[in-house]
Amino acid sequence: MLQFIRNRASVELLSRSFRKYNVPESSGQLLQDLGFVHMSMSGVFHLLPLGLRVQDKISKLIQQSMKSVGAAQVSLAHLSSKEVWDRSGRWETSGRELFRLKDRTERELCLAPTHEEDITECIASFVESQKQLPIRVYQIGRKYRDEARPRGGLLRGKEFVMKDLYTFDVNTHQAQETYRQVLGAYHQFFKAVGLPFSMVNADTGNIGGKLSHEFHYRSAAGEDTICICPSCEFSTNSELLKETTSGTGHCCPSCGDELTLSSSIEVGHAFLLGQAYSAKLGANVEVNKRLEPLYMGCFGIGISRMIAAIATVTKDSKGLVWPMNVAPWKVLVVPTSSKHMQAAESVYDGVAHVVGADNILLEDRSQHSFGYKMKDAELIGYPFVIIVGSQFERQSLCEVHVRATGGRHHLPLQSLHQILL
Ligand code: ATP
Ligand code: MG
Ligand code: MG
Ligand code: MG
Image 1 (cartoon, helix red, strand yellow):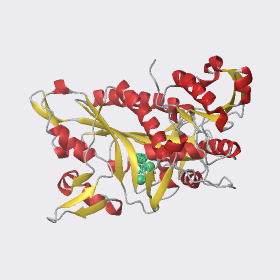
Image 2 (cartoon, protein in one colour):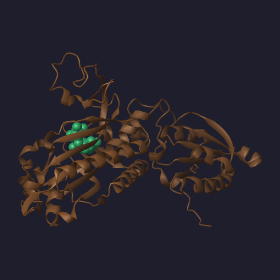
Image 3 (cartoon, protein in one colour):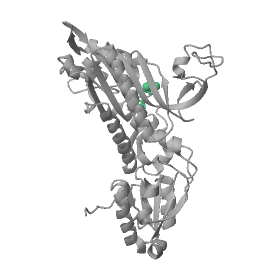
Image 4 (cartoon, protein in one colour):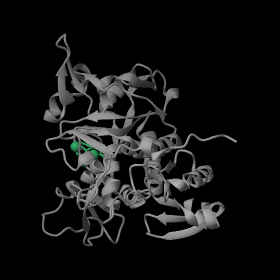
C-alpha cells in the first residue's frame, strides 16, 4: 500500500501561541493573529501556509470551472508597457490607481491592474482565421492597484490575487453565448464554495462594455450595496440604481415593489466587452472578406478577497468556520496526549484514504497542551477535529467534533466516512 508522508502541524503551521485570546471583531485581524497572512505594509500581505492553502483550494475550484467552459490557463507578465495602454487609451484615463514606473532606459511601464490590453495584443498576434475561435484563456495571478483606501486586510489590497478570464468570439451572438456559459460556470463555482451568494446587474465602469454582472456575498463589512427585488428577478448593484431613482425610496424598476438593500462584498465580475479593445489593439479575423475585430468578454474573481470574505461571512464567537471545500485542512487529528500518538497516526492513515492525503493534518506540536490545541483548532476553523485517546485504545472509538454545527460524535474508524464526506 502507498505510504503517506503525514502532514504535521509542527511543520505546516506558522502560528504564534497565545495564552488568553479574545476573538476580535475583525476577521482580517483574526487571519493575521492565527497565521494565515502577515501584513508587510498597508494593503500588502504575505500569505502564510494556512492562507496559501485556502487560496489553493479556491484556485482549484476555479480551475475546474474554467475547464468546464473550455478555457486554457496562461500566466501573463506583471510588468506592462505604456505603449499597449496608450493603444487602448487607458494610460491617460486610469489615474492614480495605476502603479507607474520606469526602467533604467526611462521606458514607461505599469504593474498590471488587469490584463485586457496585454491579452488582446497577444491574441492579435496569433489569430488568423475564425476557425480558431472561440478563444478562452484565463490566469490566476497577482494584480496591482494603488487603492486610495486599502482596508479589511485582503478585502482591498494594493497587491492581490485574481482569476481573470478573457474570451474572444467571432460575432456578438457567439460572445453572448460565451457570456451565458461563463455565468453558468460561475454559479457552479460559487455553489461549490458553499456560501449563499447573489448575482446582480452591474456598472461597466472604466473597463467599458455593454453588459455586466457581479457576484456578491452579503456582509456588513462590504463596501457595496446590492438591491434585490423580493417579487421578481430584478437585482442590481446600487451604483446603477443611483442613476435611475430620485433617492427617496427604492422601488423595483421592473415591478414597482420595494427593493431589499444589503451591504455586500463584490467577489466576482463579468463584462461583455464588445469590440473596443480588439479594434484598438488589432485583434481581427476576416469575415466576408472584411477584417472584423473580435468580440470580447472578461471575467474576474477576486481570490484574495474571497479568502477574507469567506472568513468574514462565516466567523463566529469562537473563531473561523471554513466551508469544507475551501478549508485549509478538512480534518485535524488530535491525540489527547503523546502516548496516543501511534493510535492517532493509524486513525490519520485510515481517514487519509477517505478524505484524501492533502486534506488531513496531524496535531503533533509538543509545546502545547491538549486543551490549547482544541481551542486553536476551533479558532482556525477546521471543519472536523478527530480526537484519539483512551476511548480509542479501549473501545476503538474516535470522538469527532463538527465545527459548523458544534456536533459531537463517537464513532469507530470504519464509520467515520459517514460524517466526513
Ligand atoms: P471594487 O469595486 O471593490 O474596487 P473593482 O470593481 O474595481 O472592485 P474589478 O476590476 O471588477 O474590481 O476586479 C475583479 C475582482 O477583483 C473584483 O470583483 C474583486 O473581487 C477583486 N478586486 C478588485 N480590487 C481588489 C483589491 N484592491 N483587493 C482585492 N481584490 C480586489
Ligand atoms: Mg476598484
Ligand atoms: Mg466594483
Ligand atoms: Mg468590479
